[in-house]
Image (cartoon, rainbow, N blue to C red; front, side, top):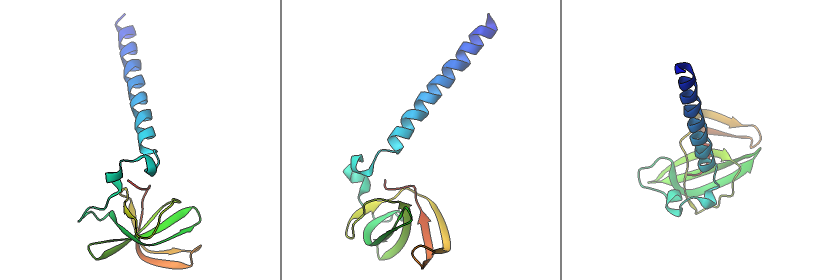
Length: 118
């Protein structure tokens, strides 16, 4: 009987965990257009936000140069609609130094590969 209760408790924890993880995935994958408008506004001092000064698409990625406080930072995100002049904030990602995009035939001194727009 004690084993049965333990097994039921373990199953309950697993079900609750799976449901919680599944709802978190749905929230994380919501399109940027459904995000709260303030979430995409640039914040001073936030290295992952700013005004779009250059953008291009290639090989399933959107390359975006953001300017914030006079500093320009390049980001690569999954292909998205982005316009010059737009204020954006990106999710943190991994930085690559001296990255060369073969499809763009262009090198970036530093670029951050982000999962997308916040």
